[in-house]
Image: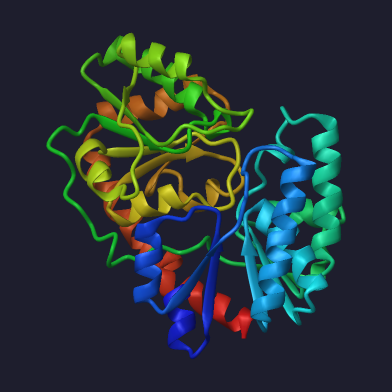
Length: 348
């Protein structure tokens, strides 16, 4: 998206919390100027969030952009508010998922504050983009935005050339889940399903890839260690490039998430040519045609997840058939150039 904006003649600035030398170098090659802000992803902190708002405001006052495009909860909320105070003429936000504040586990005051902030911030936006119709309908039902501002896109898109098809591993009994180690990614259900499958197929392998997280919704290190020690899961750590891990450790990709915007990891696995098991829940269900490129399973249900895994183990010919369908679906619906064309039209 950043490269497409530059190609269309925009002077582009990217803003993120990490001062990553590698990211900075890549963006410099793309002719994108990079700025960092003090963003703490976990929880609500009056002091920390005020500091973030001030950083956004000072940066936007200095840069005087024509358009600000924000995504994820804190950039959307505090970026929108800062843009209004800085006199930015056009503000566009993309809701990429609902996060902890909309989960059943969130405390009532967190739910109340997050909705108040969303309602206030999005009132300053010309367009609010959603990645699935369920999130859109929820925001409209709760009065967080208005129908006239809303657009839907097919996720963030995936570069089908960068994520080219990779041969399936020789061992067709390898399942992989890639996610931050959060409960609402369905990691506990994945571990329990692995235990159930091992009773019939002890040779099956279950891999987990992704970083730890400071969120109150995080999987504790002790729980992860227990799964690894008992042989339920094999933990691969964290990475910036998922492609070699999907190529080696994945015959079927699994994401038992409770809710998503559009799960990028699923799209990347589909692009690389992998069958998918994911939940019949907002954001996830859009990526899978049940029985065509994968299986949809009930949310928060280990037994249903285990049954879908057993079907692939008992009918290995489906692994390759559905892998081809996944790639076809990505090319038709989720290719980044198609998504970017919609976003460019909105931003112009």
